[in-house]
Length: 510
Image (cartoon, rainbow, N blue to C red; front, side):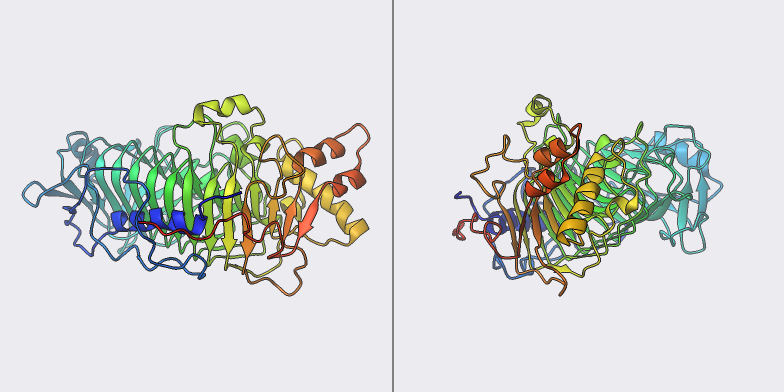
């Protein structure tokens, strides 16, 4: 199993990404960002400035450069500014419908109430408010701007954007009927210091997504907050090159999702009190095969909120996730976790799953290069504080709604009663990939789990669940929990085959 080292290659690409996405300090009107190349996908090959297993990300920081490969640019002479205050909603909508390129829309403090989406279909647009306000603030104060969509038409987004060089910052989007901020088919996107929220907690009729850039290139989401989304608070999907940093996601079904995305840097976020905290996954049929994801310095704790996703309107992936899942990786490749903290996630801290665990028909994955397999997952130099894995699916597993949680609950109830295993291990691998399973190959997907700080109570750290065999035995006409448990294997940290021996030595890159 001689593969390029994840910590070397993914970081090389991601350091390039950080340089591309870095933004300089600038005024509200300064959107004329320089660029060195018009090529939107330069790919790997940039030297790595750090060590592969140092426990910290490389020294090329996101704030160290000024280069952005712009697909559209505004000069000072082109840019104009228009200002609106609460009560001028119709005038604002009229302006939006007639927007010229390179326009800054300045919104005053207070609450703007809309009966339809704010739709942007122009390049070089900047929307700036007076501040995002605090969680639960449904009306804008003297230092915040709230766009309230409580009375908007059904099935409409809050802010709906298609354009190049789009910036939105310092405002809140409240009670959108669908997605709070949807940015699609766009490039050079800056989302900064915004808040998306719905007034009611645990409501399946809330909008699905808070911050939702999709099918885009060069996307930055930073210093923002997302609450009470019925699918994901912050979601980046089918995108090339993204930074998601210093955000807060709470009370959502999924806190942060990185889906079918190539080259993502996810740093310094807080995902607490969601059903699942942070998710990296691919779905079948999408044109981008997700790869090269660096996740560092995030807090992913206490994600035990009951799953309130609608089984009819939400994605099947999110609606099937057991409450208490810190992180799950589904059909993902070359994912590195370093410097993160997990704890108090009642089902499991990290689950590494095959796409076949959600969609079992391999043919449906053909359009996306048969990308159902997870592979090359490096989990090193993180902190696990304990308290996880002892109350699967928040004590309410359902075979109909969340079969994985139901099977795990029954399996570990037997394991506790007969073998004294109190909790699910820190990392659960479903054991499906490579498919079909080859029992002579241990850790065929190349999971690395070393140098992590574990609680004193930890025994084994990684479990090979062999989900297909366990499912067959637990769902048989006469369930066989003894046989199901015998199919599983547990491993201590740093012990073969999860000791990174599958990763080849670091190679010198040009």
